Each structure stands twice: as C-alpha cells, then as structure tokens.
Image (cartoon, rainbow, N blue to C red; front, side):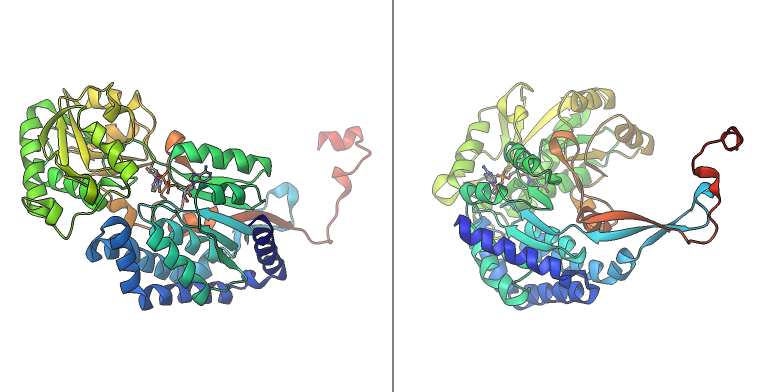
Length: 452
Ligand code: NAD
C-alpha cells in the first residue's frame, strides 16, 4: 500500500508542478464536471445516503447534494474575482512602486471527511481546494461505506485523475496517509483524531484546518416565541437523527417557560415524524452499533419526558427529550451526536452565559429571544465558532459567513471565499522600478542621513 500511495502522490505532485492546476479555465472545468457528476448520479448518491444513514431523499438533497450544487455555482460565479491579485497601498518610504496580494495555490492537499454528511463534508472542501488550484487527495469516512464506495468509483470518471485521487479505508489507511507530506490538511471529525492529525502534520510543518465538534447549546429566553423556537430546535436536532456537528446538543430554557417549551417540542416532533418515528420515511438511523450503544447509555442520565424507545437491530433511537439532567452526568459532559436532547432550566440569561462560558467553546451557539439587546449580550459575552439567533443550522446556507470552530471545536474556516482563502497562500508582492534610487538608505549612515 505504502509504495502504491507514494506513486499516486508523486503523480499528483508532478501534475501540480506542471502548472496545469494554475489555469482558472481548468479549475472551472473541474468544478463543472463535479456538478455534472452530482446531477447525473443524483439517485445513486441519494440511495447511498439512505443505506448509510437512513437519510430520506429530501433530507439528502437539502443537506448534501443541493448544498454542494449551490456551493459549486457560487464558486464558479465568483472565481474570476477571487483569483485577482488585490492591490494595497504603497508606503511613502517605499515609493515609487506597487504592492499587492497574489493568491497562489498551496500544492497537494489532503481532505479527510466524516461520516455524518459524507458527501457535503468531503466534497465542499474539495470544491474550495480545486477552486484555489490545488491537487487533492480525498479520504471519505469508512463509517459511511456505501457513499465512500460510490465516491471512489465516480470521481475518477469526472475529475482529472492526475490531479484528484480518492483513498478509501479506515484508521490504518488514514494513519498511513498522514505519514506523507502534504501542503495542507483539512480534517473533519472528532477532537481525538484531530489531535492525531495535528501531531502528524507537525512532523512536516503542514498547516491544518480542523473542523471538529463539541456541545452546541441553545438558549431559549422567556420572551422568545416558544412554539417557533421549539419547532426550529426540533428540526435542527432531529435532522439526520441528531448526527449533525452543529445540532443543538442541549437546551438552556428560562425556567418559567420550561413546561411550555417541552410541550411544544413534543408537538413538533409528532408533527414531523408522527406517533411512531421508526416508521417515518423522514427519520434517520444511527450510523452503526457502536454509536447506538454509546447513545443508549445516555437515556439513563435524566428523566425521559418523551421518546426513549430504541431498536438495536434497526439502529433506531426515538427522538428523546431528557429533563432533570445533572450537568455532571455523561450526557452533559460528552458531545451527544444523536437524537437525545437534554433540556435544563436557567433563571435568566446571565446564568445561561455562565453555564456556556464554564465549558469548552462550542462549534455553534443558538439564542432565542425577541430582544435584540439580550441576543447581543449573548454574542458579546460568550465564545462560539458560529452563532445563529432565533433559528438553528440555517447559517450554513450563507456562503458569505465563514464556517469553523474555535478552541476545542476547531481551527480554520471554509465556505465560499473563506474556503478559497484556506486553500490559497496570499503571497505579498512588491515591485519597484529601477528609476529613482536615492542613496539615503544605503551606508555609510552619515550623521546627516540619520537626521532624515
Ligand atoms: P469519523 O469516525 O468518520 O472520523 C473522521 C475521519 O477520521 C475518517 O475519515 C476516519 O477514517 C479518520 N480517522 C479515524 N481514526 C483515525 C486515525 N487514528 N488517524 C487518522 N484518521 C483517522 O468521524 P467522527 O470522529 O466519528 O465524527 C464525529 C465528530 O465529528 C463529532 O465530534 C462531530 O461534531 C464532528 N464533526 C464536525 C464537523 C464540522 O464540520 N465541524 C462535521 C461533522 C462532524
């Protein structure tokens, strides 16, 4: 394996050094072909997502294929602008001359994807890396095998094989990949492996972008529209059966609205998935037995207000709400990454802010209130990778907003121009004419020159 991989990487490096990927026309062609692949194999791709995660076609389209197609369109639309050098001011001391920033590709980059959105989280970084003119190795997650197999089969038929290479396999393959030198690594997944990736990258002084996870809180204040807040939280939590890195992990609700909020959550859940979510075409499955077993243990960490049923043979866990949860319990210490939602009471915004600030900086933070002042306070007095007010997940749809974590929830960012920048080096360039060459900066530094 080692030798074969070495040859593949050498091939990518030769391609990169040939200058092929510097051509903007080539980059656009690759992006168009990627879009063509998504169009022509839409059904197969949606089926693979269904097999891996029980994702309905509508959900697969909304969160994966449709997302990627608009990502490609946005990139194609703006690429001419993004690649343009950006002129900056020339200081008087270096006059005459001109200064500018020249975006250049990084070289051969590695993208390691996660299983929960196996298309989006692998191919959206690929869009950014290709747009920036890199050669790319993509490594899909082994935990969504049907999607990984399909990507391995389809990508070489559409993208230039001398510039894009797919490597499939598990931790052993990923570890082997990481022994090689790349010019950038983007990893999406949990923090434990994030540390392994960063460690391996340090050996080659390779920069990394780490898209990690964590416990993303939702804060529901007394003046919020409780039924809309509950509906939007229910949607963001139970989409993909809670296996979304930015899903609300737990809720801090004003104690006066606790019961009303729980009742509204239950109502939304029934409206989405009926009385028996196991037989709803719109409700997904836990990715594998290991995650199923892990999630099941959380059901003992609080009082089950609704939900709580499960079926191991079907990898099914019902949308579940827990109350009376001890903040020291496992369900409040670990990222849940599944359909279980602890709801905790708080007295006011200040208590919610303290609760959040005592914990790791989350990937996403959701505030629900009719008061702009209170939402502003939440923004100013907390840390989070991203914040969305009075809704969940929707900020992902805006390519003008960078997506990424902070502290333990990750480092670096992408989406839209931010992705292009992540996979580019902004080279600073200053050019001066030969004419006009006063000698005041050259030695000997006479006392007269020092006075200037
Ligand atoms: P995972 O198990 O799919 O692992 C991610 C990738 O790491 C896979 O490609 C896997 O092969 C690779 N990997 C596993 N072990 C490795 C090793 N020892 N060395 C090198 N690579 C290795 O994903 P996961 O960790 O179960 O994903 C869940 C986590 O990811 C959650 O914490 C979630 O919040 C986070 N996540 C973050 C984002 C984001 O965009 N920030 C998106 C999705 C998931």
